[in-house]
Amino acid sequence: MPSILLIFVARCLLVLLFLPFSALDKILNFDEAVGQAAQSAPVRLAPILILMGLSVEVVMSLAILTGIADRLAAFILAGYCVVTALLWKQFWKVPDFRLKAASRGRETFWDFLKNLALAGGFLMLAFGTDASGARRFAEHPLASSHPYAPPLAAEAR
Image: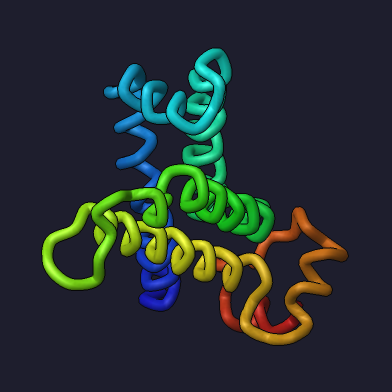
């Protein structure tokens, strides 16, 4: 039982940024989120992008927490992290980027790297930690990793 709790806590920590915080921020500050999206996308498309992002954050996080199609959800969230890093964490465009002393660009750089690191964690959840994980994922993308199964059932997979 303690291992199941540990797995659940680890999964909670993995999605904590999205559910509840980023999702709630999009709901409470929808106009600001649309304004930020409009900086990288056409204004008419911005609200749709925010609603799509909100859906991805909530639905994929719940899938990871429950273990239902969690590998596909992790793969989608990995892609979401990379895309948001490239669109909204563009440290290379910030005029004051420097490695030493205060810099908004350096802060954006760290946010960019955090997004990529989180994507790596999601990819490990999607593919596992061995070389056959990508093949298994490709063969059965909707399969669950069965995170809460008893150890003997997990070994039989």
